[in-house]
Image (cartoon, rainbow, N blue to C red; front, side, top):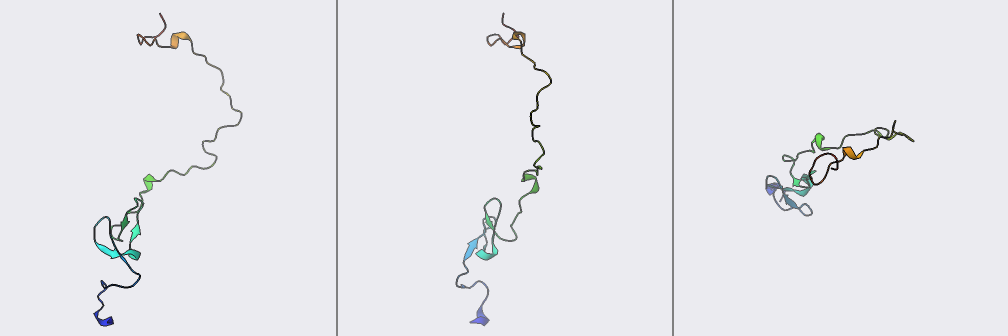
Length: 92
């Protein structure tokens, strides 16, 4: 039997799978799951692009300063408001 083995014969506990990209038949142990959750062969495998990974941010980067306060408090006046009926500044 060993001399007639072509590689495509049935082997116990080594099932086949179909590549989701090219549609050819491969052994499941030779296939890989892609980042898109597709089961593909080695030729069709496409690694995840680096630009889709979130940027690395150090733990202290972007952290707020403790007990920080604004320099001065700026209050809005009624002149800065828009009249909703006319869309113009102020309430006339």
